[in-house]
Length: 188
Image 1 (tube, rainbow, N blue to C red):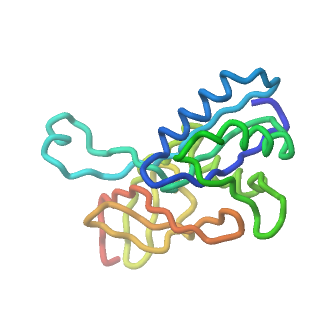
Image 2: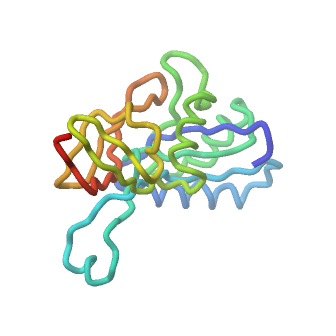
Image 3: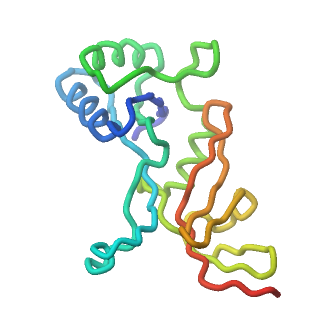
């Protein structure tokens, strides 16, 4: 993506994230805009205990990181994106609205929030699982995107192999579940 670029966030109906991404991509292909537009649904790996997945060798499934939200990465300025968005989505029943900061006209995700998400997603648009261990009450993450972010972990569920972390999105705290495999726990 050429500089400068922005991320816009769109609220969609439940379980229609991928269909909404395809609709936006198709609408962009039909338009003759001189900008690059890349809609996507950030995903997270989640541990799956089903017998079929174990036989197939798949232990993790991908799920939307932020259910009911899709993102658009583009070099299109906000005013033009707003016009494009309303034209491109007027016929879609899956897309509900474009998010903005409170009562302002600011629709692009702020740079610090975007960089935080880019760091977690590592350019893959999927938050992969992490691994770590616990000594006493202290967790240490040894692999994956949560390395060095132990302070962001609010809760760990060892049975489901998940951790809850907090991040900011549009000036609101969002709790997201990420896959975290604890390989050992000692009382230290």
